[in-house]
Amino acid sequence: MPCHGERNQAISMSAQQPIGVFDSGIGGLSVLKALLTELPHEDFVYLADNGHAPYGEKSDLFVRQRSLAITEHLLQVHAIKALVVACNTATAAAIHELRRQYPHLPLIGVEPALKPAAQITRTGRVAVMATRGTVASDKFARLLNGLQGQAQFEVCACNGLALAIEQTTLPSHQHSAPAEVSRLLRHYTQALGEFGSGPRQMDTLVLGCTHYVFAQDELQQLLGPEVQLVSTSEPVARQTRRLLEAAHALRHEAAPASVQARVRLLTTGNLPGLEAAARRWLDLSASQCRQVHL
Image: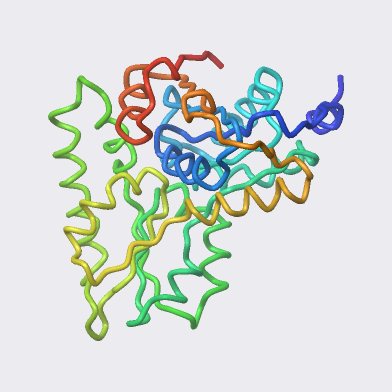
């Protein structure tokens, strides 16, 4: 039986094929939104692995196994031409294995925007909110060590926050989940220390999980207008464009199709939750969404 890489080698790549995007849940929709803007002629298949979330509190082995299974599904069933791993935890745990198994598939991961944050901070102090899986990863440690001397980083593993944000889309949690998100935001920002633009205060906050982008308005109100929030969605979208151009797989058309015609949304978990998230954050209808089992 051929290995994954050998199977991928036999897959032909056409500019007309869709781009695959996946996350442990709905957080990666923040990346998909940036991709839709940056690549207006491309089609996308987004897979939310809600049935196995949250990744940030699972083992690296589990996350690698899920990432490989999802990649294989997107290749075999949807014939994707590139893959965006729109999850910091999955990038940290699995991107190296995905690149080994699928050497001919353009792969784009996400990582906390520590370097951009170090470049824009005025006080020299940067806060980082991320999942436990991201914070504990070797990839994150290397990223942090490579920036020693450029800024002082305060890092917080925000257990439960991604799940609470995920649950705000569920009808059964519509009253309790927003309150839990607010509670956790207050708890973790207080644990990090003092924010502001004064000496020894943190004036920059890195959102080290794609889910956290959907809480950025509340975070901004909580921390004040002088604190800069930094995420990775737009840089990831630009890198995706660069890789597709390099592979001669960028799609060119006279006019962009409607968003509804360009996007398919899949979930391994709660379908109403994905439908609600699609409506709230991408203005897409429930007809774009369906459940899959893998």
